[in-house]
Length: 541
Image (cartoon, rainbow, N blue to C red):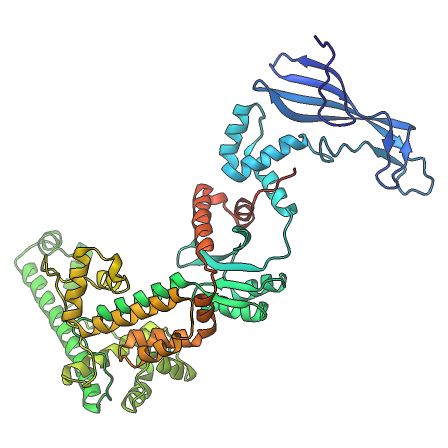
């Protein structure tokens, strides 16, 4: 049996002794090499200047912590022209300079921090006999991410956005689609940051993205040499959204006609009638509350009987007549501020909301597109009330009911069935599709276009796409026409999506992982830490 220890934490380290302390932990005494090598000039030295001591945490023994008490020498450099006069032994295989743990323990800390995070990693390291605080684990994780090796030859990337806070703040994720790993995490969603990242990686040849125009502009600015690929899943989803929008227009005509001046006058009349009806209802409420008060009821009793708040009852009874609500003064944020100009454009035949939005923005409009659409919707409803048959080629969409239950088929279900091939439909779904095709000419036309579009995506040939876009624009179905026009504006990326095999599926999966990590880390999930957790772990061997 051997009595002398032959184990060593690294080359050049000699074990002097091993002892078990009172706190049930092991202490290993060791000494450095007998000859020093200058890190600057590389010369050997035997001239000892002094001693230095280091205490390193090492791997445990049977669950008990191990501490290596290392005695190192400080040497004088024998080379007269060397800038370094003295130096200490550098044991790169044992520990990094100024480190408090050996290299193998540091690697375990980084791997556990990358997999579990701070506090779970702290509990696990404590159980394994290597006590480390959660802050230390996170610091080590960030250091590993800062010095991790980055492969500069990135050819194919996928770019997508993710939400720090939904509808408020977004970030950007960049994924190497060839290696199926995250390359970088950007803490904002902007053209400047994405274009800057692409300029720093000139080897990028293909960029897969969703239909967001922001990233398309970033690729054009940062990597003009790269091919843009639109994601096929988002193409199908945008088509489904267009179909759902059309199906939600139950009983509405999709043709376009010139709104007459009488129709605009009728729309204003409808607004005046609505205001008068509202004023009449306020008069009735006023009279009811005063009648109850004249009966001797208290404010609280009147509030209990009517359901109004006591404070509201007191306000109504404080006046002798109902007060009209003062209409706020119009300003450039309201489309009614430009009602005269919009009415003139409407009578001249300019009916496209996006075109009118662009024109009115040139005149100082600062509101949103949806606010403008509400004004145009009033005029469209007034027009439909006056015109029974807008266009002989207009497709009518009547509500269709399920042949089995008799319930109306919702637009969401109809849109999902419209893009689903016949071979994947169940028997019940097939009966719904047949009922929708018989009861709605618009659905039959949209299903025919959807099946053709799916065939083009699966056929790996982009040549038939131009004909499909022309047929979709000629269909007179407004949402489908809008979808086809957007495809034409992004035709190069759509053609690449059909012909190339790349997609943004890997980026979507990485976003799911990012959301899980972000929620698990709660408030500590800052950009630096989230990026360190998402990047691949650094391996030292």
